[in-house]
View (cartoon, rainbow, N blue to C red):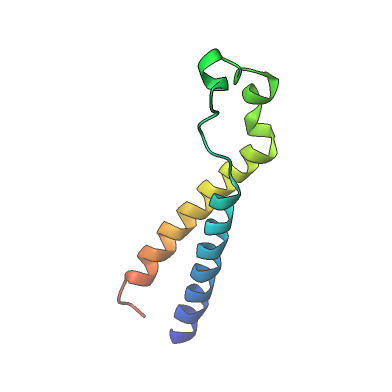
Length: 79
């Protein structure tokens, strides 16, 4: 059981580092003065889910769920 805990802890640390990197790679949500005039409603603004930024957001959500699940599993006293 100790080996499983060690493997889960290593995966947890990797997820933590990847989550920090992904959050730092993302752009801010405030678009500056362009958001006031409606300039954010361009083709790229509407199709943001298919862009690199959309991929980063999806990966961040996936890693955040993994982070929470692993944190809960590692907090159990079964190991």
